[in-house]
Length: 74
Image 1 (cartoon, rainbow, N blue to C red):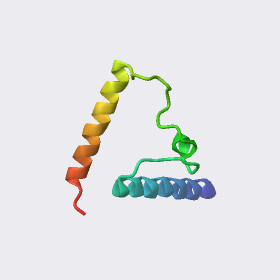
Image 2 (cartoon, rainbow, N blue to C red; image 1 turned 90 degrees about the horizontal axis):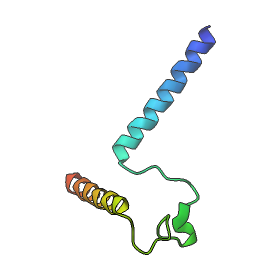
Image 3 (cartoon, rainbow, N blue to C red; image 1 turned 120 degrees about the vertical axis):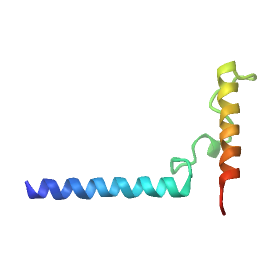
């Protein structure tokens, strides 16, 4: 039982440390391969004109990014 508790505490502390690192860096989580950008694809869909839902999502993302840049201390 002691081994289980010790293992559980180690895993919880590792997850906590990763969460703190994510919060401090404010960097999006990304894969190691570079995703679609590595193969020259700019967006996930091949639609010439994005749908309204995607346009709204892109506008929200741009607004959120602008706010994040304004709130940076460094």
